Length: 286
Image (cartoon, rainbow, N blue to C red; front, side):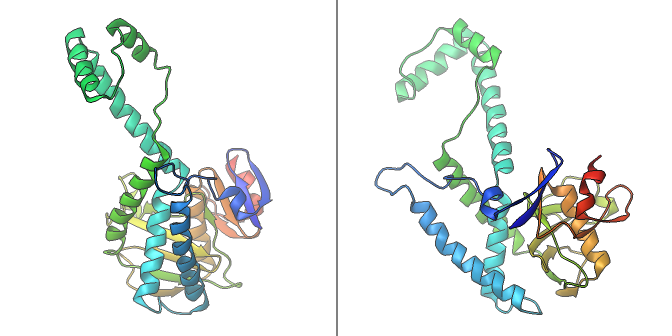
């Protein structure tokens, strides 16, 4: 069971991982000649490889034992970077803004509208042409939402995963190992975190390929994988200060949920920099 803190509700509770860390039936597809669970079946094979890879890293005491182990974890990081509801909504909103901009142009004059509608009618994309004034009013009121077929989202996410994976493979990586004395790492609903690599990077745009960005990915409660161009070591044994500092970054990245094994984890208050434990998160939020 996970200890979960929900910042939006200022509430903590216990839950199984599946109760908070999954979107039901997202991988189900509706494509002719393919079973509905085709993607889920393929993903389960990858999940088995990831589970084995994580166990090997957690049991070890050095860097990744093999390149295959390293590649599996990087693939997992790339997957989680794109496959989360918040990132999906960001992409949907972007498509909607672009589509609305296109409609602004199409509806800028009756002549442009009629010409464009005749073109798409000929292609078979629409069945009839609605009156220009009716479409103008509909578009002006914005009483609609832009939806993308799940199959299209799945395809796009796999393409994005491949692009991000190539960038991740070009970065330096470090395994930070903790223990019961140093404390446990925590994670959140955005488990692949892009954070400024230093004070000079604060406020700058961050991306997976930028040197001003650090990548933080808690792999287990005692293992955290990071990528920072200023860190040369491949393995670091964490102390309480490092664990608390990394957990602070997780607190800053949680939107809106944070996950831990219990509420006794150490973190540094993002404002006061004072050391605190998970049970005090509510006071930090206020």
